Amino acid sequence: MRLLQERKMWKTVTFAAVATVVAFASPAAAAVPSSTTVQATPSSASVGQSVVLSATVSCTADPSGGLGVTFFDGSDLLNTVPVDAGGQASYTTTFSTTGTHTITAAYNGNTDCGASNAETTVTVSETPVPPTPPGRLCLLACGGLGLVNFTVGDIHNEINID
Image 1 (tube, rainbow, N blue to C red):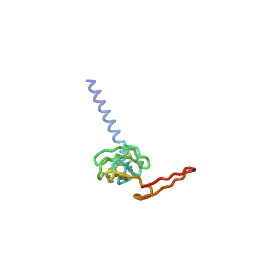
Image 2: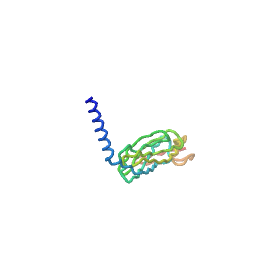
Image 3: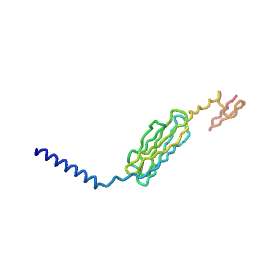
Image 4: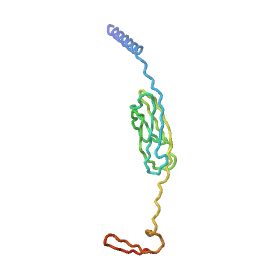
């Protein structure tokens, strides 16, 4: 019986302590709103060409820390990168498919700044094929006949181009 009374007393003390902490604890500070912008450079690229994705997070508090900015191509996660104290985050990527890619920069927030996101697009086209070189080398004028004289130091040479 005595053991039961001691347990009741400790439960009462524990509940009283928890109630005191909850009653006198300061409420958690609410994170201030943030805003995010994102830019792709260049905004039109070829398959395999590097594109720099740059996000800027604006917040009245320091936006660094936390989980940084996550870049998405549509629903595909590209990467999560840290945000510096100036609110900057960047990631370089390439695209393997043609078309319009919707890029989202999602700032994940921290204890001081709330989460925010922004979108931009990147238009990706086929890699251009270099032109086929002509069948013969054209030095001066293609199709013409002529004699080219070269003099270098004491050496003189003549080449007939047809």
